[in-house]
Length: 272
Image (tube, rainbow, N blue to C red; front, side, top):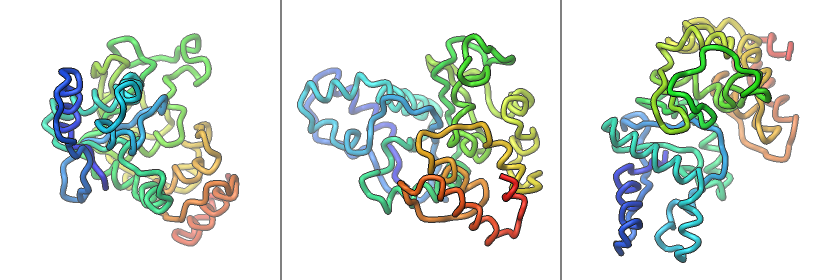
């Protein structure tokens, strides 16, 4: 997997601020997720920075470079790196810039590996951009989060389900990057929000998943930008793999059902 060198990212941004001209530093490196300690980011996409922009930032003309640095996506990467550095990590994975999405094979490999990457991370940073308070919300707020059933948007997205379950250690942050709790301490409330049992949140899927239908019930109300991602975001939770075919629409879910039957013979998936 490609990982961000957190020191290189932070130092490069400092050099830009002080107008220091330095040789281009490599900010991404291919690493083995099974032996490399790394942190990983979970977040809601906004105005993001992609692989090409992150790698070639110093080669851009000044105005274009500043446009990239002003984006919320860039600030999110930078603050994630600072948090990782503070926590003693050398490496960080962020989906927006650690996958070269121009390559369909690289994108397919990343999506099929994503659950494992979150599972193998040492710490996951869950950034909740729409929480202003210094504490995690303990009750629904339908006025503030009216479009997301009373909870921060992170809990309504398809991809963040596996990003909550797979990592051993999930630390939540508010809009200002203030820590507001972790998965273990918040497990009772997270169970109320997500319908995923406390035992599974703390100990993983092996501690209590009874059927494919149970997993589907957790994902039923979640949304994805692309129709196909409703299926692709569940691959790791079901322990199956399949090639990505963006443009296939709802056929992706049919292929997912067939893969689940092929690997587990669990017919409860057809209830969905």
